[in-house]
Length: 359
Image 1 (tube, rainbow, N blue to C red):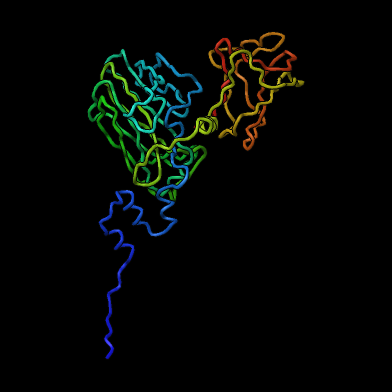
Image 2: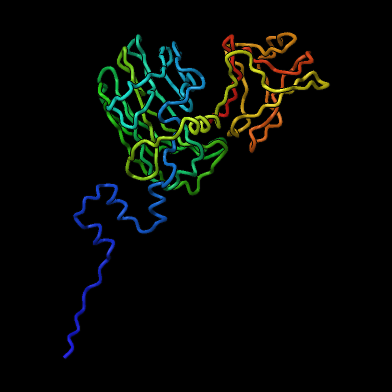
């Protein structure tokens, strides 16, 4: 006699996810993925930190910025833009961690400090990074994490805001994240997860970016400073430990957006040649290809110098010509009556030739 037994069908993946196994939150999320493609899409295997200079190792422009006026005070640590209230005066500095400290994991060397000490109770202070190309975020989960403390507690007035800017000629901005939080005098890790909707139907213009901005949007308590460290933005719905890139790699990532020619003494850029219209052309070769043809300036009101004499003060702002976006090579053009063959930057007087391709 034959007995036939039928068992109901079941989904092995679902049963495995129900097992009482010590897989943790991330393991549970991984078990719920339906394919290798979905796993890689959600958890960004390989390079994961979408922010550049999240550990504040690179400061090409300097490490102390005192008496910064209100409004957009520009980039300080590489890739990090600073804002403050009109009429307020703030200071941005690079501060060092003590060797062997265990409050902030990953052994970071530096933190960024933003301070209104001393200042009246009228300031707001923000830091921002713009991540290139909105198409990278369409229909994606992202998680932002960082460590923060203040010299006095802050309650409910600090925030993290995330939005898409579709660039010149593109659609209107799309904000998809805004969260307020408290800040302690002790180091604390903040973690925020957001879903970025699809950008289907949107127009993407030139120089589009995701904007991440945080800290105070209204009056900051008088004599307050903030310390921030270990910023990371990654795909997925879980925060993971900070990605540790080498100094050389992080510097190269920063130099896509900003590079300055600076040396301990005179720095000879390159050989130049004089044209019939009195323009002098000097070849520029950047260490990495920059995002766009950069805007050149000379810091601190300096003038260019050659072996014969100074260029006049009216020649302090050169232009860029014939830029090759693929190689990071082009011509620095200066209007001059001199038959110079070399360009000298008097960096021993505090001047640097700055090339900016920031978003």
